[in-house]
Length: 141
Image 1: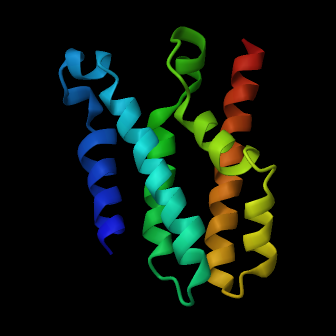
Image 2: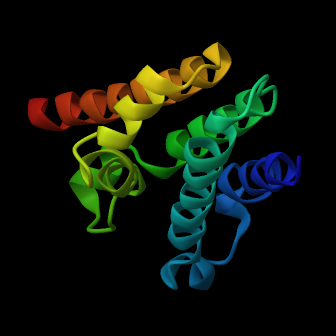
Image 3: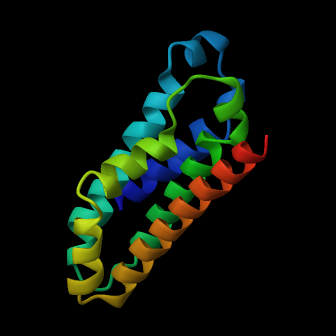
């Protein structure tokens, strides 16, 4: 419940309203660090804790918040105009590529809770879908 409220606050108060903060705040890299940290926390909570419990009703709002962070963090404009590190690609490297998706497949094949598999699978599909769409747009230009 606390993670759910934390993520909703990060999305509503920081990601969606980042344009209201002073330029010094953005230049110091605080928004990017906050997005990286929030995705790390959610990844740890979803993959390491909630995936091993039954009846995970809290996975949906956490997953939705992660989608929002990813939506407001990377766009194809960032890849073509700035040199900031990608929040989305760092999440993919750390969560999936670090162990060649072994932990992801372990959850998908061994987790007995269908809702946990569903939400982790949905998160994975949306994450890679966004990365592929951004790559497609960038490769056209």
